[in-house]
Image (cartoon, rainbow, N blue to C red):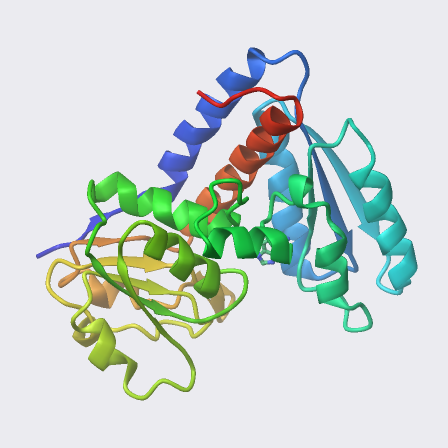
Length: 284
Ligand code: GUN
């Protein structure tokens, strides 16, 4: 078998075109506020891409680039101001934050109705209790979209997630459980992860270990989703050994051009949804 590629870049272009067309029907453009503290290189690239994508679909994007030494109160004041600014529909605080800032406190400060990253515990709790009001974090939402693009019925599928982060592994487990999958979450303390993945219909790697997932870990025809973004000798690669699994998987996502562009498309979709909710418009 040679795996088919799930092209996240192409899917994201289609999603963004749909958002752009929906925005033309609104009275005003939705607005996303992006906050970056410090100069983390990867974060600078991600935030630039988010700004560009927002502009492409006709959204307003306010970028707040604060210096590394920013005091916690200053950041909390900015979030409070944006929470109360009716022009702003969505707010994201790029992670990781510099060490002197309390991430939990900062994420709790973002108003749940503008929390388009879904990182506020109110939205995380809503997702866990299958409340449709939840903003679902962009990466898990993008992974779900990719799965649904190649699998019309996820019900009863055995899914193994590698990684238990608050940004990907945990919300993804809740989201897929809400879609009737049987979900196993493995992590750095799991013994013999391959004993779990070998029997899975769907394997999702989000552990930050370059090329860890090999073909021996994968069942014939399984769907393999790679959330990892790593660099080996300056070259981007995922948590899956892409070339290796091609001969056994049914579908696989590339890095780059897989989950990454989907995350940005879903962030825009969340911001559009936030605009509708804040303006009392029912989504069709
Ligand atoms: N850092 C890594 N992924 C993300 C994300 O999806 N949102 C934010 N705000 N920070 C991140």
